Image 1: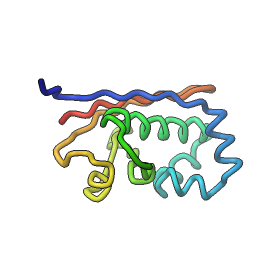
Image 2: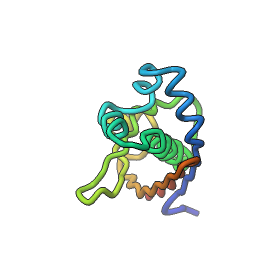
Image 3: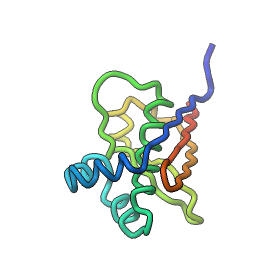
Length: 126
């Protein structure tokens, strides 16, 4: 039986994200977030909430695709914003291959954050 879509969800503690960024600095940011994601988050008053939401989105995508062996290049998964601010996931063809995501897969993303937590849900249609 074929399932037409998969769902992944993740929740991230904003304080843990802040601690990781403060301890590991730019090395952590470059390993996990694209330059555009960093520019977006750094411009926000609540930047750690925005970083946490993006991290949750990346984890949710990995869960939607069923995980798998090996390490993931989180910076290969990018959260972008559409014309009206709606977030969406972008994976280059190279990233799709690296993460074993089918070329025809499409994603739907929703994110939310508040003072203590950020959450993201990803639906992957295959």
